[in-house]
Image (cartoon, rainbow, N blue to C red; front, side):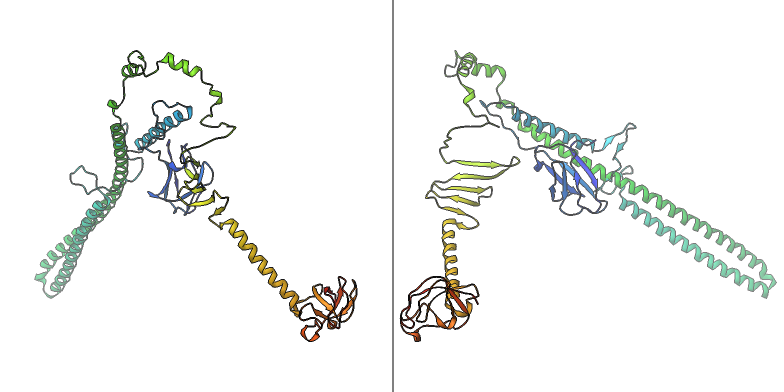
Length: 461
């Protein structure tokens, strides 16, 4: 049973497909269709969907590939050993060993009878045989069988031609017999020869059929040999890659770069020889005097009070063990929100100004929008009240009534009301409304013919 991969047969759809093995990070899971890497999306922590449908009868290989050339945890002298770091380091080694075991299980193995088993898989990329005991490829066998069939066909054609010639001789002999009794014995001889030729032709046809049957059997055997050779090649390549990786990992370890236990004890525990260092008793005494309850834990803790970060402070935000974005205080005193690619999305300047990638400086945008809104509203409000054709029923206008005092609720025709503009006491310089019926909303004293005070009128009809 596979420990770090799962395989499915394509059916023309995108899935979903189950992940049957554990993993440290989703980035360690890859999917191949017929040996080619393909894109996919995660539906849950245990199911995925392909971006493009897998062809019918294709092989979908979902496999965990734990990093082999990078340590997920790097221990340093003097650091605190925590359970999560130890577990992560152990998981990396454990998962790598499972993946190596899967590679070994998928390689050519020796069965109980001493033969190699390709696990019912094709063996591809095999050279043509040289020695008599070499594995033959499908192409090599088909070429050989085709040559044998051509030779057998040629022999059959030659036999058929010989039979035709014998039949002609027999006919000629029969004619000679009727013409001359003395030629009868010769004709009989020709007949006998023709019979022998026919017998030979039948034997040749049987041989051709035997050659064809043998060629078909050879082609079938060659196909099986090619499949076994393909599986053997793949398994051998995987085993070689695993062996090379193991050798590379072993080469990284340098025993000379580490101290033995005796050297470590001599270095750090013999306080009489190295006075600048604490021995175990002195370290225990120092640690006993530290109030660890006031310290913030590395994971899952709550801190109260103020936190001061000096230098060039930045706060990275991770998601799924991957850096996603950070808050950064620049040397200019501006606080920025930056994604992992270096693009600034949000900024709070030290003068209080706010900037974002979508709208720019927000204070300037608000001012610009307010001015634009005010200009727009002012234009349409002025137009509504200055152009007569745009005063609807229920609309308002400032105006003066002709030579009369105005009181709330008094109604006037549009012809007796002018807009509150133009020179006073001069009807010629004023514009009369000249349509509709209006009611006064306020009070105004009468003046000369058109010089009364202005008030607000509402159109009612």
